[in-house]
Length: 486
Image (cartoon, rainbow, N blue to C red; front, side, top):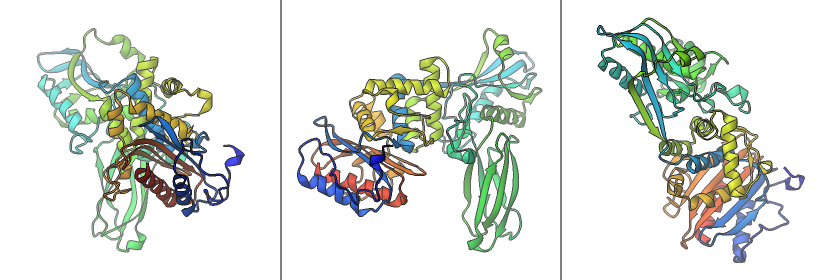
């Protein structure tokens, strides 16, 4: 960041007005400055870019070429790139196959292979939150083929992606959190295990925990106890790095509501293979082999024509909707590796980011002008400018998949990260924008439908603030002012 952008309070002591490219009424500049001056975000660094899409001209620029941490606004670039290069009709296809012969007595002489496609949607998200809907369908399809015994293994084919599950730029002390879930060519339940705390009147006894899905793949070390004192209600969950040993500690108030937590798993492809093996056994199908990851020998020894047992299909449109509307980091990272696999021929993060760079080049930006380390915005090393973001938004506004892109964004007063922001009748539904937050960065970028019939592309990036609440309030007031006055 340039030294000239360091100042005591965000626009409190501005000596330069917001730069207005187009000749706008003086009150536009003054009102935006007044909004910013209301919130004393000491030592903050702010950039604003606003573009009229009706006239295709800039309206407001303030430090709009400076680079900022963008947090989850990074997902705008990821999803736009996916729409540009893969489109809405791109399909993920996960198949379950019998690699061997099925004898008349129901014995499969060989392996069952779950062939992954990088699909982030293998979960209960589209099935009334029933986590087991998809693997239960696979189990039933296996029974329908008459398979009663499997002599081989349950093999997770995750080879479409590499096995670098975690990005080096992510915070090392948060890798057990759901928002740091690992990527994988074969994923399940967002590569997390659900832990449900059940309230009971058992003071000083261990808390009752439910695990979904119920699998031996993880080991829960429960050291959390019930307390009758609400003020003592505090607990922690931690997964030891490189393992699936999960430690639950602290105290849980007996009168608290049931609470669901999500913890990322290690070796996610093996997670699904292990669970499916357990489901086969519980469903009356014997498996003599083990659950394991695919290896080179498997690829060489595949039968010429494996028997398809089942397949599960989802679309890129679904995936983009969840990525932006729910700000799901896991989805964004799966999309990055999908881009790498299908556009560059190898499903890794580096190749996926190269595709984003190619898209940025189309927008007029060379790779030396910005920095991108992941697809979700979790890394603090991602650096973009407000102008880059509004250029992207302007491009997508006229894109053939622009409606899908815009519809994936949270809507003011309605859903996603904006469901409680700008919720009054005057602004409800008028702002479609991606929120973003990591420590030290708050971002809001998207579209504003104004009272005068214009549509604006905007980006408001704030770094190094002390009050997230004030940063959000400043962003919201600016949006509301723009909606009323342009």
